[in-house]
Image 1 (tube, rainbow, N blue to C red):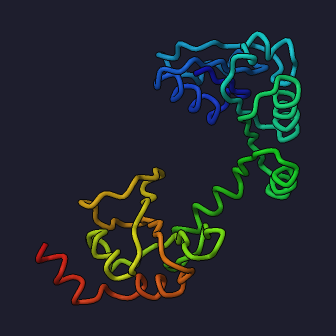
Image 2: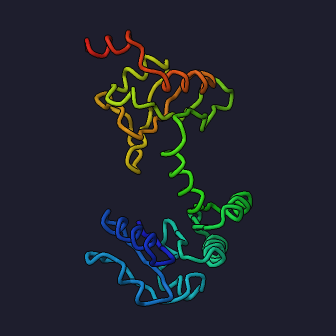
Image 3: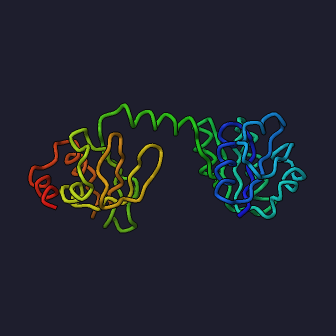
Length: 228
């Protein structure tokens, strides 16, 4: 697939290198030719010198063939203009804009422009490592019959198998957020420090899950996992 990225800063260069390494076609745009020095030595994609919301520049990057477009320069206004240009003028549906101002990000989200608020994301990542363990509902089914809960277990749960977590909470661990990666839960996995577990449950019992995972694991559950 072909991807176009505007902005060859640290974020843009990292995106371009990763997509290129995965075997995709990549074009990265920047006003400063020196910015392309941030790309890895093995980058085989296209370097386009120019303005990322200029239509002629976008055409040089083969925007018409793009599967997706990301505007990740340091300028909020430039990112929004580029995203709207690509979406409206070229009909690219998968677009995302990097926005530093969280208030602007919320506004543009309401206008239907997908954004990534870097300031908010960084703050939330820091908070996850500062605040006490907690559990919150991140998704609820239309009928309310099922929910997905994000929970961070206390230290007492470190080293405990995910199967034991499921037995204690009555839910199913679906994903594990670990070391900046989200992994599909596997039966052999155990809880590690700073893990965030995404647990599917019946109903919306976040408080019950929080109470369970902020208390030591039940002795019966630990015995059961040891026997397995």
